[in-house]
Image (tube, rainbow, N blue to C red; front, side, top):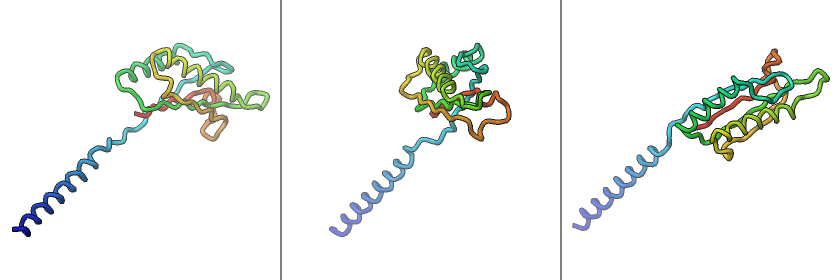
Length: 138
């Protein structure tokens, strides 16, 4: 009798452990690819044109429907005609996008900005160095 009771308790513990193991595996959400956008600027300007404002409005609308965990703004800078980098201009461009998102209700606490500077990620076109990439993590 004691042996039979011991087996039942042991089987119950094993079943509970297996169930807990299955539940722990189910809790992990599936990986979602980040959503990416690019906003381009005119030379020597951090002003958002109409196309940029439209992109930001669409992003904000989508974020209201499906909130994000984080948003990263990568601001690129190309060299000026004097040969110096436009890092302050790139930072101003990222700030313009951050403020536009915030004005449309996006929580500024989830937005971070990185000034990348001139890198190999900037292609042969000067336009490549006048952009801010927006990456949304859900």
